[in-house]
Each structure stands twice: as structure tokens, then as C-alpha cells.
Length: 241
Image 1 (tube, rainbow, N blue to C red):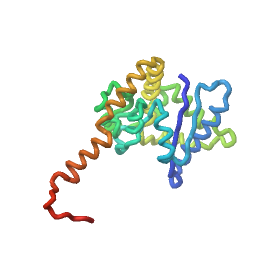
Image 2: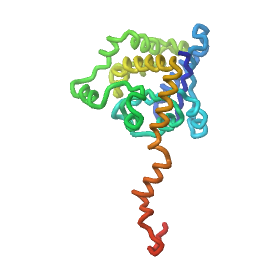
Image 3: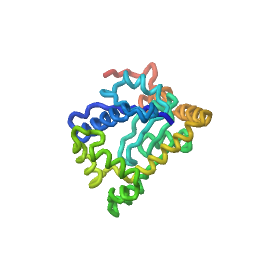
Image 4: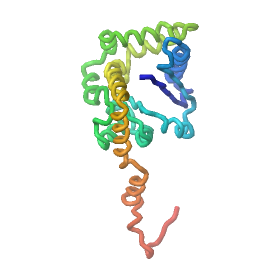
């Protein structure tokens, strides 16, 4: 299915690897978006300085929200909830707020993939070698070779060699182990999107299932459990800070 992929980020100035990833995203976008063979089937856009104002335009327009942090590594966020509340289906790992969302809307309504925290713990215990996963996956080999050989940075072929070497030697986020499952999940997304009724039903179930995360429920819970407004009476002394 034709895709427009939007990446966004900010505040990476102090992190060399993050800056390299952002630069790579822009390099890949330049190659993809100017290749006539693709014929508009795929476009990549990197939006700098992601902000609330940009989110107000991006989130309602998105069909698919990718929340792909490695299981057990990311604190619960709210961006994925905002996407789901606005009708975007979620492609995600079993991590952070993704878990709460899946439990609320039903796991079948989310495109889940990747290792769970228990499997990652097992890999850490026995020893994780990312190169073994690369050797078993020709598509992954082609991806890494294209990046490391300079296909996206012809003026500086070695620009991303260090980035790829880091993945092959350390890969602290187990990206190589999750790659095949991610690709398979994307195929599932494509198949579902071709059936417009099935996709619409899933999107609506996402919205409906997100009701418990609305501000109405959140404020009511704060009133009851945190602020204890009900315990205040007209006769009780009021304290203000």
C-alpha cells in the first residue's frame, strides 16, 4: 500500500547517535523521494522540532501510529494514546502505555510484535549476539549493507559505518532480534488496510477502547483519590499554598 512515513524529533544536540539517526532519516528521505521508480508509492518526511502545534496537525491525520520501543525500556507515554483517541491504529511492542492500551481495547485491535520483557531477559542471561539474527535474514542484511556502504550518503560513503558497527556489536535495544517480527507486522497492517471496512472497524474500536484514558476519567480520579475534594466541607478550614 502507498505510504507516507512521518518521523519527528527534537533536542538531540547533545547525543551523537541521535544526531546520526536524524541525519540518516533525512538522507534516506532524499533518496526515496527523488527516485522515479517508486512512483509516489513511498515518501519519507522528517519533521524537525516536534511540538504541540505540529502534533495538532500530524496526530489527527495519521492512519497508523508506530510505538516501537523495545519491551521493558520505555516509560509510559501519552503520544500513543493521543493517536489512538484520534482514530489511528497502533503498531507497537509490548511496552509502556502500549500494554495498557491493548488491555483496554483488546489485544486483537492492536498490531503487536517483538520480544516480551521475559524473552529479552532470557537473551541477556544466555548472551545476545545480534549478528546471528542478521545472518539469518537476507532482508536485514540488505538494509544494513545499504546504509553502511553509503547508498544513502554517496558523498561520504563511510558516514554511517559506525552506526551499523554499533548495532552489530552491541545492539542494546535488541533491534536485530525484533526486525523480522516488525516486517511481518507491517505486512499485517497492509493486508488490513486493503479492507477498508475492517480498518475502519479497528480504528473505531481503538477510539472506543480509549475512553478510560480520557481527561474526564482522569480528572474524576484525581478529584476522588488525590485531591479528596469530597472530604472538604464548608466548615472545614481552607489552606491555600
